[in-house]
View 1 (tube, rainbow, N blue to C red):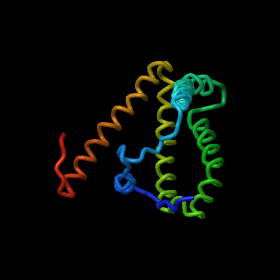
View 2 (view 1 turned 180 degrees about the vertical axis):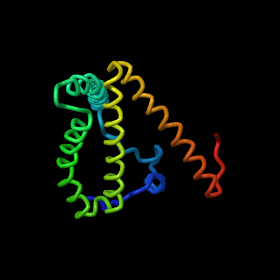
View 3 (view 1 turned 135 degrees about the vertical axis):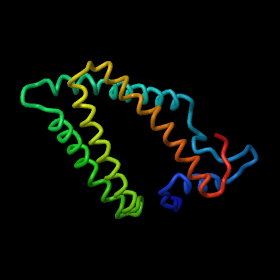
View 4 (view 1 turned 60 degrees about the horizontal axis):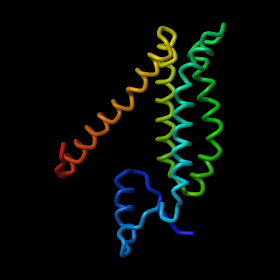
Length: 165
């Protein structure tokens, strides 16, 4: 077993990976020794996850349309189950030093924002079709990428680095 550091930022990860051991063929690649069939397996896993994610909108529409179930109740139930199932593993990871308390706290804050965003999606789903909601909500991938790049460029400029925009 190797003694790996706890990495809490993307900058630390970049430095850690940049210091990877070199060989005659080039830098060490984590996937060396993995057969190409493993790549197909993980591509299949990604396709399955995408299908499950896409089915979320139709399921939410069906559940929220039931009498006595509103969007807030559904979101609270869904995210409470997720939080309670992940809590023991998170506490164990912090105790073992695999992640820091700061990382765990950040994950809790991020998860809370995701839950609030999901409540907003569910409320919006009551006034539109699942297909429209899926397209609108999927635009967050593009929006987040644009905002993240803007923040990265500004952070790099703030540290005195030049970037290509």
